[in-house]
Image (tube, rainbow, N blue to C red; front, side, top):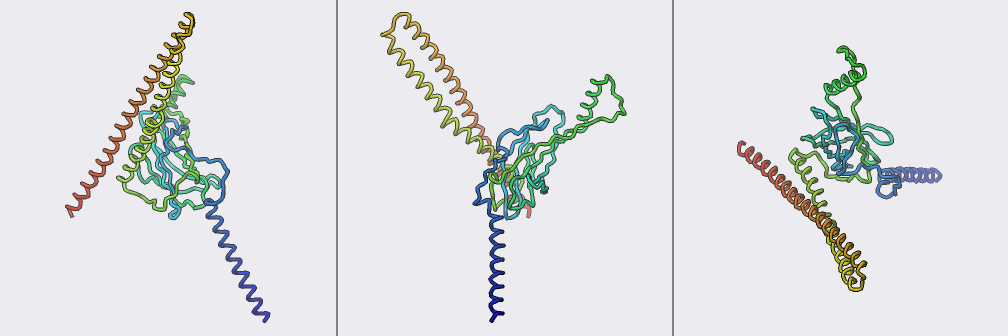
Length: 307
């Protein structure tokens, strides 16, 4: 009888232990979903210029994460802003913010100034990831700068002198789990698909700018003009009750307000030109996507025909 009771207690103990372990794992791996995180968000802004390198401005376009496959996809653009005759190249690395654990980084797409990077082996309980972008300038340019510096300091340069070349500049692009979108369908795509995605992201930004101009900036200029015109009507209606000296002052105010309306109209015209330019740019980019798709279809048709 005692043996049965002891076995029953042991079973309850093991069941409780297993339940505790399972709950603990659930708490650890789902805490992001239900726990409030009051730490400051450290995310590098999307679609904004990121400075810090010597010859290059970086623009973070997109950062997604596939929790099932444990990898991140980062879309990054570079804009050459330096004076080197040879544009720099880049090397990438990724580390966890707190543990400094390194994650493999692979360039899976590169065209002109566009990069698609995959960061692999990222655990689901990650918090903040740092993507290190190293700008590697041409060695001959660095040697030339070093010789010029020595010449300026000493007036002569020994051809056999060992040159002190600077280390490559590095900028950290930061990804915070609260701003990185999860996508369980995320996978490596074709070159054509990435070309289209970069264009689609550019169109998305243009659409936002168009919306701001149409719904905010242009209506605001109309409101300002209407407000100034109402003030002018009010001043004009009071002229009959003014002395000659007061009328002169009112006329001066009216002239200033007319000038203010002209200035607002100039700004409105500038916004309208910007709007037309953006609409045209959107149209051209949409045509570019269609052209890429059409070219891909022709390649596929030619491939099928040769089989």
